[in-house]
Length: 209
View 1 (tube, rainbow, N blue to C red):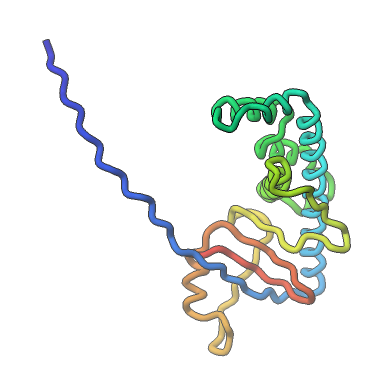
View 2 (cartoon, helix red, strand yellow):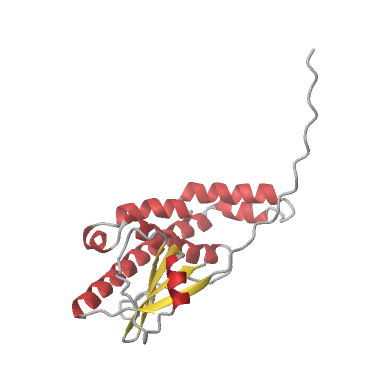
């Protein structure tokens, strides 16, 4: 009869250390044609973002109009599992989730929008819309804000560095503001980049460590 080996005690895991990060912003030098293309890129992002907001808002209203919503709200906060399961079932039934909006972005990315936005950027905008809608859902905000054509998107971001717009990083001269520390930051940049728009100025911002 084989003897069972005693279970070895697992050592306590050390808490994951957070890598310090910083935001590196570089000005873009563009001609009129390139600036027009970037404006079209942001306009396509604005149109898709508003579409995702509209679809998500309809789903949120239907979900709140369901009598099961009030039943879930009536569950005491002390019963966390039952309360969470009730709300999760409602979210799944009405497609109110980040993944569901990702799927909707696939069908909304058509025509001229598909010429400016790839699938990864569409998912990023859908996630951005879901975060705004979810703040309304959990009571952290009263309403969502649609982006008008005049106001537009202040920035657009991507979560990968092999898709979306590409920029050429030119070798800086001794008088340029791109220092050696900035270059090291650029080389270690994470695949999360943002294209902010400021009055009469374009810039590229990336998260570095």
